[in-house]
Length: 403
Length: 137
Image (cartoon, rainbow over all chains, first blue to last red; front, top):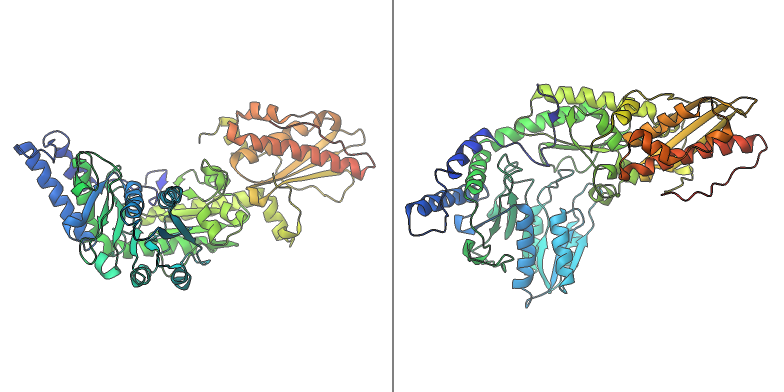
């Protein structure tokens, strides 16, 4: 067992050695530009890209012509949202999304607002799911796009994508989903789910960083996005720029492996995750954040009340995990995702996200449980809030001096 | 973020963790911060008849720097008169623990806790609280 143990697979994943192996020839030996039509170097690269396109398409039930390669999910989100807004602005100027979306979606929507678009940010229920009735109520004839993520990066909650798509389509809007955390972890099928645009990333599924894709539906309806990167007209004019051939090959291989192993992996990981979760929720005053029935198999986000996340993580330095506490990130606000579930700031500050992955072993999970329990106990011994709680003092009755 | 060795030392082996009898008139208690902000410090001092701090205890809910700042504060308080203790400046803590700029608020909180504890003691013993006029950085 190697220390520290990596349990932050929602942030990024280590590359699978099989993916690396597939990529290597495309750095030097087969280095051609996939857009070079006049010689074998270009053909070899193009062939590799075409093959990868099929591998990606297959994982999400799409056709290869519907895959646009990008630099990652952030770019895919931007291209989808800004691109749809520009392409369909004669039809309407309204977009609906949710407050728990990734910043790539939220900030792209903010950009659309600056361009004169209207954006509705749906609140979520306290389990993290959106309220379908609320969505329906906000649909207008001006609504051109509904963008709701498939699985949440912080709490792992899986939205009712099929139902959301149906509502969007009923009102003549497109449905886009940021599926960065879901693709390769749970079955995603663009046709069964009714998805018109889908963002995915390689590095969340044991592929390389710096490459991702946007699925853009070609039939029923034929969806178009205005390019956000101008140049040589690559990727059917939707995304110019010389293709990142090794990266794309890696993304393709990563998708293929997920397709083959996802089902058994999901079972293994959810068993390990449940083991970790039940061992940790034995601790007093610990709470699982988000809906536990509609959740990605590998994620558990747990709040340990009366301890602060960053302090806690310091005591868990043998584990690489993530905290919703403000102190860990550049911003001073605790996680906006957790806050939007209605969690009070102190619970949001007390949260730890455990993200298991393909290379997580049971031994590591057992060790993580021990380390976390010890850390929570240590921090609670130091915590004046824990002492007050134990004495039966209502913390809300105290007038805190906010600073 | 990398922590200094001193922060890690205080965090791993915090000095003077505990609770003094807050109802005693010889004990001053300072409780500062707020759970919503991610840090709460409680600092307590035991003062003898010569107004010298003979014991100090703390408990802190917060990040490693907050815990280290309060742990260090208790070390510095012991043996000091309450007047000298009042002079402890947050920047001394910043320097001692090599806190980065984003963690300066932890030292501010520790200074506030010291002053709150001393004032609690003063008020309990019929002395006027000392208003701090300091503007924090």
